[in-house]
Amino acid sequence: MTSFPDERPTAAFDVSKPNVARVYDYFVGGKDNFAADREFAQAAMRIAPKAPLAALNNREFLGRAVRFLVGEAGITQLLDIGSGLPTRGNVSEAAHAINPDAHVVHVDNDPVVYTHSKALLADDRTTDISTADVRRPAELLADPVVTKLIDFSKPVGLLLLAVLHHIEDEDKPAEIMDTLRAAMPPGSYLAISSLRMPGPELPELRAITIEGEKLLTGSLGSGRWRESAEIQAWFGDWEMLAPGLVSLLEWRPPIQRDLERDEVYHSFYGGLARKPA
Image (cartoon, rainbow, N blue to C red):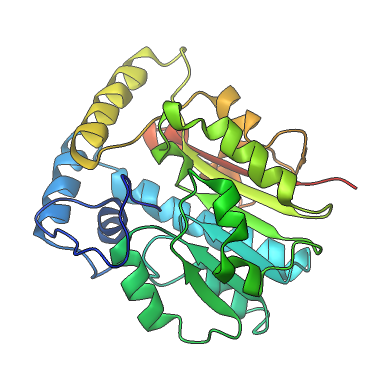
């Protein structure tokens, strides 16, 4: 979960202000957060009481997606853009539980994430972190940390989980995704999760969501709930895997159950797609 605006790992980070990665860490039960992050999270929960559940749903979606990519699709290299703090159940952990030799590159320009990741992701034979910025995708793809572990002549599992909703419209997320998809060889997979604006048939929930967007943008500097069609367009012409772009709760759950169609259900969507030959 990349933090914006520009930060570099050499820069001192300000713990007096909330940070995207640390707020997310708090929501999923991590310990790498500070008072400002917890205060923001609690303010967010006054508008959206189930915000921590949304974060946990995203982490569960991450696990299911990685297990599919590495376990079922046989993908041996993953590019995790906007990786966030390496809390329990991160991409490396999920991938290496299935294939210890899988190559994983995390990408995050947040200095907090970089520092923690370098300390915890010790095996640079298979795993590393790049400080490249997703808003400059060509530079990201050419970054030495990325090219050391990712062979773009072979299928790649490309993950952008809970990051694209932090890309402002003026940074042109559609063009970013065009560049990233074009660099992937046939047989690659793309996993995306993003905050999604509830449909017009839910006017009250849309109004609450707009208030939440104002809070996120005002305090963390970025955050956009986007319409389903815009999220879908980020997959381009790749072949969507069943069940398509859906609420995270509906993407291949381990147990089929009746779901409460609440704000969490309607406001966080994801899916996987495969690049055809």
